[in-house]
Image (tube, rainbow, N blue to C red):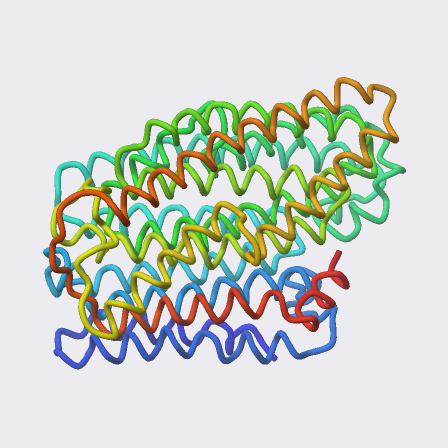
Length: 471
């Protein structure tokens, strides 16, 4: 497989987005479905597979993340078919959304498949800039304001990542030369880096940039504000796809940092993520609408993915990440229906659905909400069992077991607050408020079914075996 085949669906989508025919809407949707085909082929090829020399290399982790992202993209496409039924959107804005989605997908391919720190950064920057314009497809003052806010915060984040990359490159350049930009060589020679302190500083700066981009401390609210102001498919892209490009960078950088000095890495990341979850748990407790609730919950789950990864439980991290990639976009897309008869109304949101489609809709959303708080048999239930087990095992191996156990207890307490809030919201959605009739369309129901099937597929023995092989 060559790079052209991977990029061809995006190129077609970009070209069709300039057509003003009514049929363009369906061609754009079809081109989004076609994105999955070359990724499935890539998924089946033996790994590692060199796509573009040693610059773009597909391994099991890359293709797993890219495969998840392509499924999310199809779900978003299905919801776009009925976007104009729920919100006011012009045909021009609709085409513009797809135009920048095509650019976004190109950036995503480069960032996820890159074996080069520079190419990873370029892909991330391309994805960042394209999402600015996708936010602006909602022609409201709030969306335009948040688009500028995102550009500023995104510029800060990618600048930190770039500066961190420069320092990491400089730390390994004496032994690797120009090849010090390549992830696989950095990992292979991590213990030989002559300036480990310089690498650790670079890793810390780049990690802060990646964490800021995912809404971690100290910028917890900007992501929720942007997703509230955008069309709900944009929020689904943020939570299900853009964060994938960011987190895979953290996975790669942290694997190298573990070889350089694991204790420093673990302490830095653990404290940072605990602080993030501490703040987010109380923001979730005060959330008054679905978009902010789901957005803040996404930050919490990405923080858990990071904690599990550095605690020596990559299997738990990847399983949790996969479940989040399906659950959170599904919930964001559902807001188009849940809020269609009055925004910010949580009470009674799961009432007023008629017919088989309506019954299936509220049943699926109920399952998604219960799954996101890790009730069994959600994949998140099992990932948290494995993840917290690894954290306790790490505590037993460390020199400060008491402080580690206290930190784990604090983390579980914060997660209990979030659990309580979600249960209270679910009860309000189901049993309180007035009953208002809400319309559910076939395409958005298909999107939710797609996510439900994908979520169940994560628990298949073959899927779990595959994730264990990656770990």
